[in-house]
Amino acid sequence: METASKGPLDTNVVSNIEEKQTNASIEIKSTGGWSYAFLLLANQGLATLAFFGVGVNLVLFLTRVLSQDNASAANNVSKWTGTVYLCSLLGAFLSDSYWGRYLTCAIFQVIFILGLVLLSLISWIFLIKPDGCGDGKQICVPMTAFGSAAFYLALYLVAFGYGGHQPTIATFGSDQFDESNPKQKISKEVFFCYFYFALNTGSLFSNTVLVYYENKGKWTLGFWVSTGSAVLALVLFLLGSPRYRYIKPCGNPVPRVAQVFVAAAKKWNVTLFDGQELYEVQGLESAIKGSRKILHTNEFQCLDKAAIVDPEEARHGLANPWRLCTVTQVEEAKCILRMLPIWLCTIIYSVIFTQMASLFVEQGNVMDAKIGKFHLPAASMSAFDICSVLICTGIYRQILVPLVGRLSKNPKGLTELQRMGIGLIIGMLAMVAAGITEIERRKRVILHNDSSSLSIFWQIPQYVLVGVSEVFMYVGQLEFFNGQAPDGIKSFGSSLCMASISLGNFVSSLLVNVVMEITTRGGNPGWIPNDLNTGHMERFYFLIAALTTVDFVIYVFCAKWYKCINLEIETSNFNDGLELDEQILNRV
Image (cartoon, rainbow, N blue to C red; front, side, top):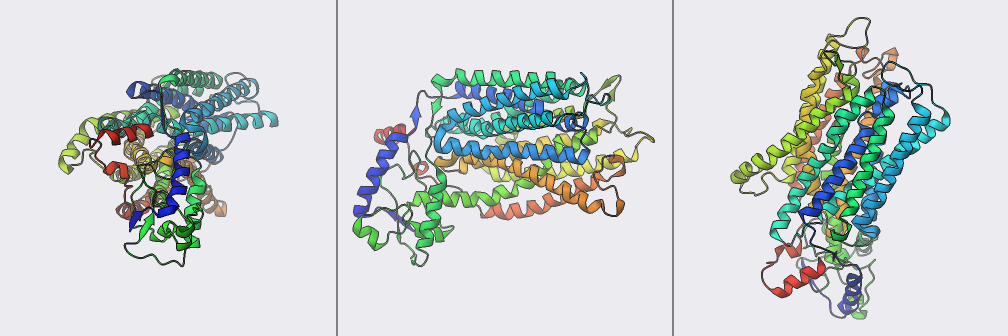
């Protein structure tokens, strides 16, 4: 197919487009760069510290303080974590459409802080009674209906605030680098690696120091420390306000995408000929305000009918967006359709990831966690996951990328799709390791005791493998979805990574429910009973490993089918002339 402008139709459309682009083009207050990106990385680290100060030990809070059974607590944690990352879609939508990255980050951080303050107050006043309860020895007084409602309100305010902030801060950080500058384009790709590094650095404190105090019954102290960290994160974020690089929102993408499908449906009976010209506006800018043009692709050719100019439109110069769309608008819809199969294949990996905050903790809680007289909190074992991420990130950036780059002639080393596939395989091995650990744990159960003599350090391989898989899967996802998303939906691209974690938590909860429903028939205790020594949790781990293997096979087919986005501006030579440089600078 070819793209072309269509006579009198362009005069009306282009003038309208130019007016919109003048009002909503990209605005620069400074060049941004690493100085301000580091402020955002610090913000991410502190916000993550605050979030995991609540989330990493939540399953034990629910069992010890609220007296929930293991299966219910694991499900509630999965639902809450799923809600956290599902809120990322709302944050991304508001960021891309109306508020912009900066304002969205600021508002959701305020909501996050309000949730943490309320959670700290509710725990202090209503839940931790008597003082120090919930340490695994002292039982807390049953909470009232008001206390329960206030607790869940605070908990989901935390989920709403952190979820809306997370994908937007990732995209806002990458916005600090100009893609038209080759050096800054490389920095933009490296930023996501550092972003995940900052995330794990922040969670390291939560998974070690805060977990220790919370495990000793000092839950309120842990929540107040999280609140302080979130406040400091907001202060650092606001410090860079005068000098950030800002990109204004590109308008609501929902009607844009809907127009493509409606226009294509209205022209369903129109024949699309090979070599037929399709509608596109003239000039460097596209019809989507502030966005670059996307070159035409041959996938989903039925949608190309939305860009066919019929004789009636050409004769009267009418531009009804529900009947005629530009090639760039059509390609934006195609990009979303191409990314969806890849995204769906990442959900099962998030089922693996969510086990660290639920079943891994419950498993470690019934193992020998003593080091001399010191009792290691089960949730603090996730520190091995975090350290694995930090070490593997350095190895990947400093050793693996240069080595593979020389062998493959690709400066990136492994492509994002290859990394995500490797992450799936390593994640599957983590589940196998967890299942083997559970088999060994059950062999060493102490009679007349709920725990096992097997050392909790047997969990190290499963945590380390999950950490290594994260570097490949989640960093790869952040780079892939942000890089492949069109300009108008960049935050949406980043939110897809978080949304896969969300659905992974819900799928995990569903799997637990289905497994318990089937395995408890006939009076059996089931695979994940309240007394894990009478169950078979290793079978649940092996089930996840089997599902991941099937998912990997499907993913390979989807990855081979995928075609990368092709932006028109990327095919240009940025050194061809000063005029083109000025056009790009005006856009950025």
